[in-house]
Image 1: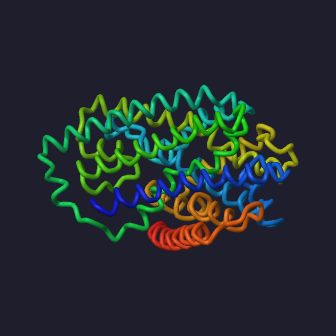
Image 2: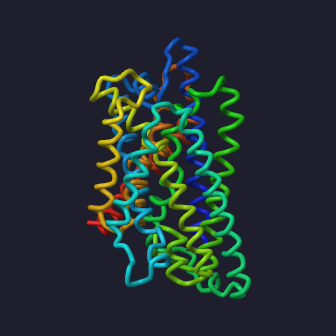
Image 3: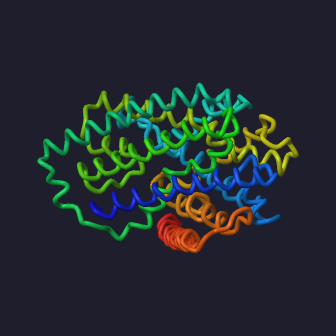
Length: 364
């Protein structure tokens, strides 16, 4: 809705950024107490006991593999095959998603996080260019339409649980916070870079979602550019370029998103040292699995995003960090802080249950 959407995303993004701060705080307290934690799972292991690390690791694997599967789905949904080859020669979704395999198999060859910096930088450049285009196009369309679309929008919609899942999915960076922080020289340097970056990213996402909704009304496709292409909002040449940019961007980001899941599986299943992504054949198997899952689920990008965001992503981003802060014995949690964090846990749990039920029912 025109009111609940922007307000809801602001609240969810604020919760996610705050919870990232809680997770880093918890690790620093453990370090002072003489207990070193390198990953989210290890932090949970120190606080929750033996079940903590397996619990978090499971949700991280589910989240990251789900994200990687969505990347294949996004490629199959957004690549402009109809615009390039004509309607009669349009490549079906399943074939299009499968065509991403050769590129992904090459991108997952590097085994070090630092080696992925080039891919991440290129991806950010392409995404920023595409986002800027969408923002400009949204403003232009709204002004030309005299903001008529905004006047017709309801203040809220019954699909709010799906919106929560999609929003939390877009804020899924909490699984990467500590691995990225480990590669920095110091925690202070990491904070100076990470938090301004994540706040800027949340602001851009908020602007993009709000302006797009206010300009074009209800958007059915999981990809805004694919939706605009179907509506014929912009020129054909621009849509081809933007969609190709975004498809390239998600593929370039794929190795970094696969990394946390690969590390967990390599350590627990293949016996590799902690902090490594294991042998190439392990990452190859994960890539085949995520691509196969995307093809099997069909072209349901929006619902897939909502299901992943409502389930594992909500647990990691909204529920576990305040719960860990409450149960952490290295500090005394005063009553105001305890009540506030308990309310965050409760709200996260309610949103997760609603989102999983609604998206799962629609998808299956």
